[in-house]
Image 1 (cartoon, rainbow, N blue to C red):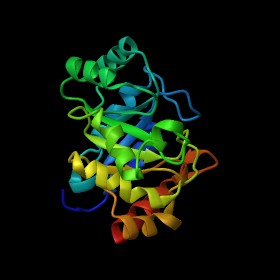
Image 2: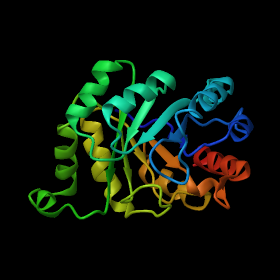
Image 3: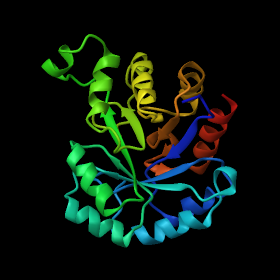
Length: 233
């Protein structure tokens, strides 16, 4: 897999006016949080938000790819949600197993699955059994071979606005490349540091939420500045 321009995911959208204000910005994915969170949206709210996303032009003038963020949602509930809100990607932040992903793919063959791994979390004896972080990352991804469309690494807990040690990025990037998967990086990103990340590590994508907010709400000025910084880098 060769390096290409870093993709941009803006996560945690909750209202139609903000989505409409993003029309024309060259970002790639728009995320909606269905897990318990201060940014959580309900299954009832989702159709209007997805419809709004489908009406705007993002990178290359196309509507953004819609991504739902989940943590251990029971499969029956997931099937119900996807029937009501046809997301293009599900981003799994919990302990969802390969069997969970397989069942999801079987029921929704066109859905993309992104698996999130926490970096900096103590993995106890499992991690100690591997000679390097890259080997450990490969072992994590091997379990999901053929089931994923992207890998995302984040600080433990996710959605905290806190970065992790970026020295871990190369190991996960190499592991993801072994399975021909793009690596997205999240965790504490904002206009002031994303340029350094992109120049130094060339991730497949970056994922931002709190870094483009003011007073807990998405700030279109910060969103524009973040997107511009990634593109300039």
